[in-house]
Image 1 (cartoon, rainbow, N blue to C red):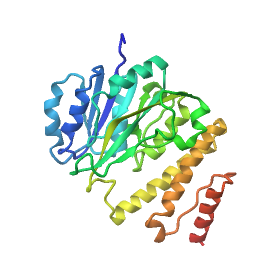
Image 2 (image 1 turned 90 degrees about the vertical axis):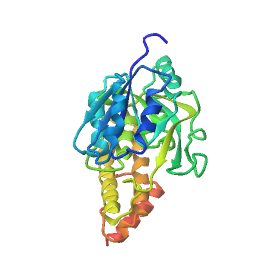
Image 3 (image 1 turned 60 degrees about the vertical axis):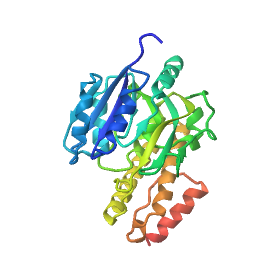
Image 4 (image 1 turned 45 degrees about the horizontal axis):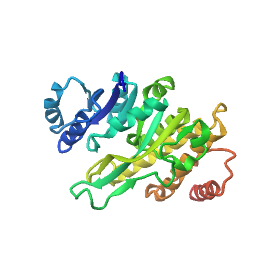
Length: 307
């Protein structure tokens, strides 16, 4: 493949001194070398910065330091610095297969795709990677190497999942639609990725495990303090409200709205199980004219707890 396109790999960094080297090694040693690696140091208080320093001799790395803005803010900073044709997000405590980009970039180019989806493998920190693994495997839902166009995949909304690190995305899609991560929430992928899916025109699924997701006991996503539970709950409410706003957009197709509806219903279900809901009243969302049974069941539940 001549004139290989540049891939912008965005790596937000916050207090990952134990993992950042494994993450960066997996990126800089990619068989595909046409990269700009945007490392956003988001105000770490550990030795993450010191761990990164030896890597800065690699001229492909753009190192950005900022006061702590959270994962969304760090990703947005990375996108603002990106110049590549494609964008890949890699969390700094995870790592990727060294063959990932040499395999999927040619597919993106040959088929002029807006997005490629691949599989991921999750493991618990400190355990052997072959033990207690969970898979982000879509082979039972999607046809491998099939080009999904326009509404053909949006209508099949069951194929949608939110983790942004499971996709390689054409950067122009993000720019043309002003897509950024909302910075006042956690679970930001639950809002960002549906918006990406609404706007892409072509997508392909590659049935290969390229992303390795690490679960840490003390990470922000696993700590279950009352404050963290409340923050999680509040974030999901904000996400639901924002998706409702998109649902009411008259320019969206039926298939686009179906995808949004499914995501909102997923959020309803998650909130229904939240420990926070047992201790406070919450307001129901308002997606009018959604008359499926699952929606009505949850709406009735919300009305009961607000009485």
